[in-house]
Image (cartoon, rainbow, N blue to C red; front, side, top):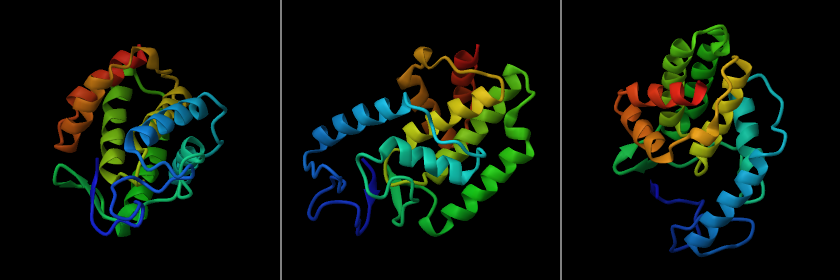
Length: 190
């Protein structure tokens, strides 16, 4: 669970996010989110230019059934285990800078698997540190990254994804250690 101060995204006296089904139990909301985002991920994804607007459209697509604010960058400061993510007032600038770099690198196209994994790990680490949305960042990141990989000629086999290894790698990348994330991507891209 995220730490947030004065969070307008949650029900009063609760840490449960306000949602379209008015689910007040966290476990029920978690189950609904997982089910609906998985179903939406299997649908055709929004078209776009692999930029921040496209990333937001993918988040909206995945979470449109759960949250009114799906696809809209958060307006509150959040952290996990006392590690703050990008302040909301800087999300657009940092995300636009990151996605401009991605475009300048030809969206990671024409790279060997090793180079793709290395640059892809850095991109994912930075995107994770921005943490653009109040919830659903990991699922949106993975969905967007799979689309990016596919367009770059490195289709990911998400059936091979080890969720625990991915989580550990993402946490390590937050502390500038991208080796584990690179290894996860290499396994998926083979």
